[in-house]
Image 1 (cartoon, rainbow, N blue to C red):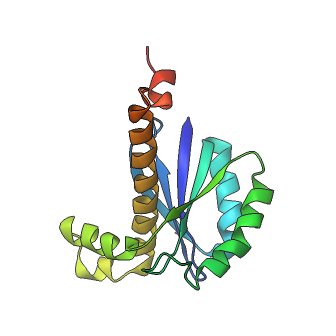
Image 2: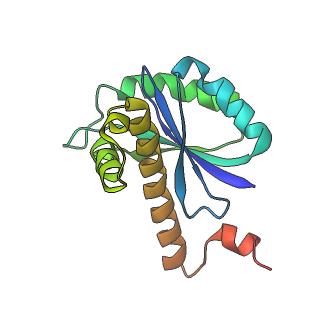
Length: 155
């Protein structure tokens, strides 16, 4: 089934999220050490058809790239080399950590679980992916179409 993968790349941990087959909802998937990320994604691609990778692009409040973007720029060629046929898109990730903490509180997650940065990273990846999915689906509706995935899966 077709899936979109959200990536919140970091030096110590990388949060991952995955879409539902219709490309409507994003769910936190896992948190992986960056050195094992490509291997993990290759195993995932054995079981799922990955339509696109959506990578969080950290920016400062003024819209300029943050210092962390250097690490992402170094990672992108590795991702493209490992998956040459899968598109990679960048998505603004400003405030995703704040939104992730808010989602954990609103969802009733225990304080000890909220302190686990791995949870923050995978929820941040889901927020990045969900923002991209929402914009993609809104653009499809504005263009007079419906989600291509929904059309493909219609009876």
